Image (cartoon, rainbow, N blue to C red; front, side):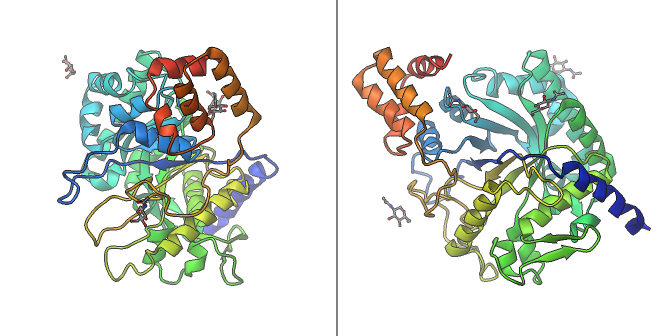
Amino acid sequence: MKASFVPLFLTVILALFNGSFSLPTTIGVTYTTPPPTATTINTPKLPPDRIAATIFGLHLPAMRLPESDPSLVRAFAFANTSLLLTIPNQLVPSLALNRSNALGWIYRHVLPFYPRSRISMVSVGNDFLANAPNLSPYLLPAIRNVQLALRDLGIKKIAVSTTFSFINIIATPFPPSSANFQEPVGNLVIRPFLQFLEEINSSFLVNIYPYNMYRLSRDIPIGFALFQDHPFNFRDDLVTGVRYRNLFDMMVDAVISAMAVAGHESIPVIVAETGWPSSGGDAVEADATTAYAEMYLKGLVRHLRSGMGTPLRKEGVAEIYIYELVDKEVKQGNRNWGILYPNMTKKYNFDLSGANEIGGRDKAHFEQLKELGIGSHALINCQSYLLGNPMKSITFFSLPIETRRQFFEMEG
Ligand SMILES: *[C@@H]1O[C@H](CO)[C@@H](O)[C@H](O)[C@H]1NC(C)=O
Ligand SMILES: *[C@@H]1O[C@H](CO)[C@@H](O)[C@H](O)[C@H]1NC(C)=O
Ligand SMILES: *[C@@H]1O[C@H](CO)[C@@H](O)[C@H](O)[C@H]1NC(C)=O
Ligand SMILES: *[C@@H]1O[C@H](CO)[C@@H](O)[C@H](O)[C@H]1NC(C)=O
C-alpha cells in the first residue's frame, strides 16, 4: 500500500529540486572541552584565544560549541566565525517550565557577546530524546521558550532548533525512500517540531555517523562508507530509481524522506556532527584507524565541495560540523575523533576549507590596517591572522577587543 504513494511524492520532490542551483555547504567543526581525567587534571585548559586562533588558522567559517562556554563565545569577538551554541539536555525541563529560565540562559550565554560574536543558532539540547525519553514532552515547549526569549530581547537573527541523532529517530532507513520517523516520538515530538521549524524558518539538525551505521550493518562495504569509487560501491533505491554512491548521501536522504512523509520536505538540514574515529576503544572497532578517518573526512569534504548535493536534496546540507577539533587526551582505549592532536598539530594532511588563497579582499584589509596606524607588533599579528598562520595568529586573538573592533569596523 505504501509503495503506491511513496514514488509519487518523491518524484514531486525530485522535480522540485531539479535545476535549482546549489550554494556550497558551510563546513565547520565541533569543539568540546576535554573532561578532566587522571592524566589531564593538572594540565591547563586550552585558552579560548588559542581555540579561536586555531579555527582561523584552519580557515573554518563555523564552529559548534556543545557546552557554549561563555569564555569561548567571547573569544570569537569580531572573528566572523559563525557559532552554533547548544543548551545542555539537563536544562531542557526547566526551560520548558518557565520562560524566565530561558531568558536567564540567553542573558548569560548570548547577550554579553552578541552580535560581536556571530552566534547564528542555538540548539536546545543534543539527542535529548535518547537521553531522556520520558521527558520528551518538555522538548518543544523549551525550544519555544528560547525562541520567545530571543524575540523578547529583540534578537531576530539567531535561529533556534534542537539536535537529533540519526540512529535514534529514523526507522527503516534503507532504502532512503522507506525511511520514517520512529514512533511514538515521530508523531508526538518531531511532527509538531517540523511545523514549528517551518513557522520560524529554522533548520533541522541531525547527527549523522556513517561509521556507526557501517558497524551496525555488516553488508555495507567499507569503501561505500568512506566515499571510495569502486564498481561495487553503490546501492540502488528501487522505489525512487536513485543510485547512491556513498552512505552519507543515503543517510541524509533518509532524513529528507522521513521529513517528506511528515509533510515538511523543504526544511534545510544541518549535520550537527559527523566524523570517523582514528582509534577505537576495543578490538571490534578495527575500522577506527587514522587511514580510514582521513579517507572519510577527505571524501566528505570533496563531496560537499562538488556541489552535487544528494539525490533528494540537490542543494545538499546547509551546514556540517565535523566532530571534532582536538583529540581528547584520555586514557588509552577511548576513541579519538579530533582533526588535531592534543598538542594542536594537524593529524591529517589536507585542507578542510578549500580556501588556501589570500584573496584581494584580505590584502585590502591589511593595507587599511596600516593606515589605521596601529603598532607594528599588532600589525604583524593581524597580518598573520589574515594570512591564516595558525601559530602567529594566536597573538591576533590576544589583541584587545577594542583593537579588533576598529579593525573590523573599517569594513563599514
Ligand atoms: C564574514 O563571513 C561571511 C559569511 O561566512 C562572509 O560572507 C563575509 O564576507 C565575512 N566578512 C568578513 C569581513 O570577512
Ligand atoms: C518563573 O521564574 C521566575 C524567576 O525565577 C519566578 O519569579 C516566577 O514565579 C516563575 N514562574 C512560574 C510560573 O513558575
Ligand atoms: C528564511 O531564512 C533564509 C535564510 O536562512 C532567508 O534567506 C529567508 O529570507 C528567510 N525567510 C523568511 C520568511 O524569513
Ligand atoms: C604532536 O603530537 C603528535 C601525536 O602525539 C606527534 O606525532 C607530534 O610529533 C607532536 N608535534 C609536536 C610539535 O609536538
